Length: 532
Image (cartoon, rainbow, N blue to C red; front, top):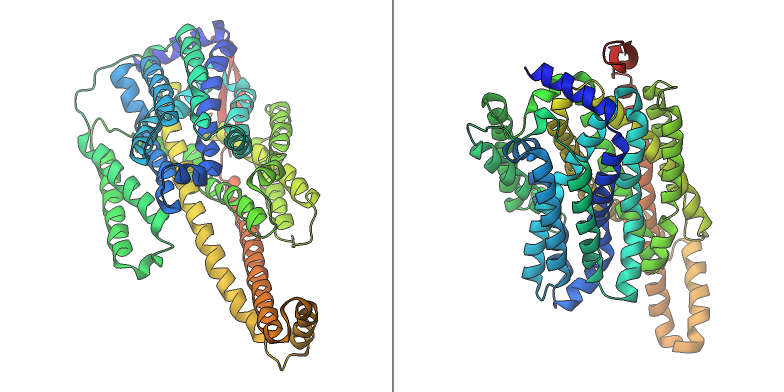
């Protein structure tokens, strides 16, 4: 019966113009993805408004991510319970109203609660929209569809920091949330008008509610996020609370896996990992997500801490990555059915590694051009990796598996990004200490170069501070330069490590089954077949 419903749905998709549905979900996607990064640059302003510390203000991000992560993998279950279109409408409405509440927040508590609701609403939108895009287009057109989908997914978080900085500096941080309100209501109208559920995505009966699976999912995601947020300042596993929390994460994660495999109606159907392409794609998505989110996190810090850029200027230096992404999207759309997608991913991975090597050779005497060029290359490579990766990971799945699969796929990216961002913060901190230990060996008066440097500094300072303080101030300046150089070397090491990781991932790409398309005369569409 389910196969018959799938065939009927595929017949319907060949008649209805899929671009109407694509346009309806793309505006919603752009709004949600933009909001995931636009608030980052406003955290100091938010903290100042409510007299909160910087650590307290990070809960504005953490609360959203935790709520988001809980809903993403359970999207298919809620879609069955309510009907996918109804769930998408409810999620969009919840996100829009929560955005208004965020913009009108009068306390940090109110803002965090509103962000939790916003995360619950936004979590379901991404996997549902991706499932709609994959289902509406026939298999041979999904490469083009994923290029369009990628425009929102890739371009929005790149312009988010720049737009957020400009809005915050020009108006107020409240408007980074309030701008979602009119966009959200337009999205609701478009979804209501153009989205239709196929038979297998309509409201169905859920005999048993998987309460335990949902509870385990909430616990391991929530505790993991707390560890990632606070682990570095607590010396990670040197702190007893981190060890106990990590044990709790491991136990509840294993319990979640066992529960979802054993129960008849799981909240997250893990049987989708039986598909080889999807399983490999999800692992790659996790690792690549960790690398890409990490580089997006440390580059603004590098520009502001070491180069002296303002928040707005650092955003402008990074924003050309969006032009590179757009170029990559056009290339992916052109190559979609002309070239083996595994080779496109491989080229993209190597080019992405090259951009990280370019970042890893920077110094403190560079011009903005030296930041812009590798950013453009990185943006293009990002598209060349992610668009065909999404296509090849889902093309062998059935349409009625899409909603569940996209939820799991996006959860992998979110968890990978959270782990990667936390890891890179630790790497910069620890590596700068290592470099500082090695460099400080040269700061002795037995080293001729150090003596010449101190004498030169004293010569410049003595006319201002006098001979009594010139030696102390000269040594202070030298030490500050030491810290700056060791931090720079730590940043450069991180970029080089990421380049090596990307190159090592290349052989894994060819574990994918090659996808070809064979004409199906009865349905008059291209049906995917796989070969090694």
